[in-house]
Amino acid sequence: MTGYAPKKMVYTGSSMYPVLKVSDIMHVSPGEGDQIRRGDVIVFSPPGSNDMVVHRVISISDHGLMTQGDNNKDADPWSLSPDRIVGRVVRARRRNRLLAIYGGTRGLLYASAVRFFCNIDSVISSFLNPAYHRLAKAGLFRRWLPDGMRMRVLSFSRSDGVEFQLLMAGHVIGRLLPGKTEWFIRRPFRLFVDEGALPQPDACIRRGEAPLNDFS
Image 1 (tube, helix red, strand yellow):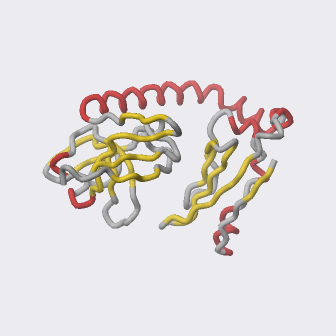
Image 2 (cartoon, helix red, strand yellow; image 1 turned 60 degrees about the vertical axis):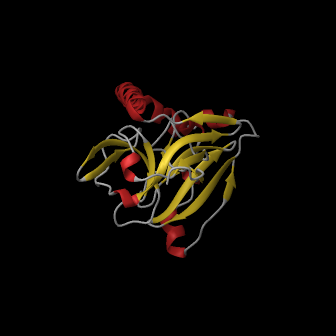
């Protein structure tokens, strides 16, 4: 399939952060499985699913390809056959910037660095989290939020349920993934969020609703 024009796909999720961010426009180069290298970022559909996943190849063997998100602690629990691969992500457009997405050895080194700093962050967070959550619950910082920084909750239908995203000034700061009962909100934005005002996803799903809410 060499010579085919790259496909353009919109990235959603957080497993490839910071290489890819929500709403990045990915340029996906179609290719056969034998053209994929360890370290490449690929788009594929997992076995038994029609969903599209974007992760990095961490190993290749006769049994297939193993993948893992740069921002995930564990490797994916499947082995990919070549027919599940849509293509390799070679570039991404983020607003007005065109970013190269590196694969191969350079990609593996980058992914290792991301996980190293994530582990450092996790250790530091274990000490700071209690104070952070106490401040967030107190709600002191919400009073300082400018009027123009309104938040919005969007919902998206997925094959396994409904995903909710919390946006502030056009940026995704929080998510509630299908099947989860607790919001993931990026630091330090929990300080500004009234979690009691967030929609109750279970009730919305039972009613079959897909709410779009604004709240301050």
